[in-house]
Structure formats: C-alpha cells, structure tokens
Image (tube, rainbow, N blue to C red; front, side, top):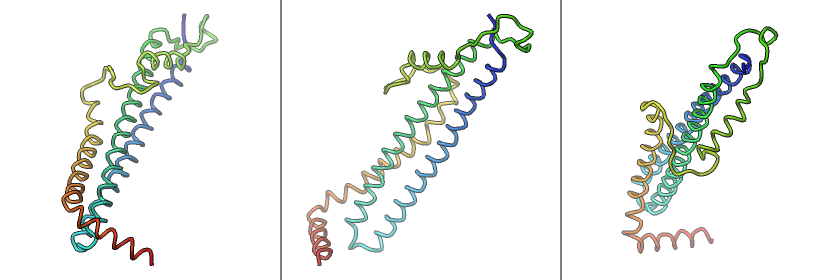
Length: 189
C-alpha cells in the first residue's frame, strides 16, 4: 500500500505549524512574565519610598506574584501539551514515511490515504494527552526539556516574591489592619 507524497507533505507542514505556534506562545508568555516582574519591581520600589502604603504595596506584590505562579504553571502545562502533539505528529510521519509514493498518484497504483490526522488522534489518546495527565513518557532529545527551565525558574521567582511579600503582612497584621481601616474610612467619605 502506498501513500501520497502530497498528503505526507501537508501533514509535515501541519507539524511545523505546531512548532511555530509553540514558539510564538513561548514568546508571548515570556513577555507577560517579564511585564509582571517589572510591575512587581515597580510596586516594590514605590513602597520603599511610601512606607504608609506598605500593606497595600505588599498585598499588590503578593497578588501579582500569585498570578505569576499560576501563569507560569499554565505555561509549563502548555509546553507539555505542544510537545505531546508534536510527538504524536512525528510518530505518524515516521510510520507513514516508508510507504510514501514519490511519483505522481496517476503513475502509482493503489495510492490510499494514510489517515494521518486519525492516527495522530489515536496516538494522543494512547498517550493520555487529551486529558489532564500528571506525567508524560515522551521520548525526546535531552536538550528539548530546556524549554521548561525558564517558566520553572520564573515560577520559583514568583514563589519567592510571594513569600517575601506575605511574611511582613502576617508579622505586622495588627498595624496593617489599622491602616486598612483608616483607608476604608477615608474612601467612605
């Protein structure tokens, strides 16, 4: 049984598009994370010169840090999902490749569809990539996991930032509670 080279080529291009989308998403996610870190730094810097707003500043930093942790975690999950999709696509391509007819279909008898998208879906189901999975058994080059280091490092930075901002809030809760009551009273006028 022979498969059409045009179908093989089309499917390969769809695989490349997934990689391009992953790269674009990584760039976008990196930009959002950097903007969040800059916002945290600006609020932190502002709070050092405006001690009267320490509680508010620390609360904002804690909130931004918590959002950063959540966003970084989603980013890590997104990378894993894209890697699963690419792994399935390349497995399908490798299985189709030995039977590709490089001659025009009119010159080759019995050219049939390889059903690559159906096979990809079946592979994704076998990999449990279509539902929430806690671990993946993907075979990839060791260097391909470097992509996970940046979001994991950013997540660690956000966790540290969160802990640093929450510690003084709890340590001085009674003082901040009085400040908070004063701010609410001023806002009520």
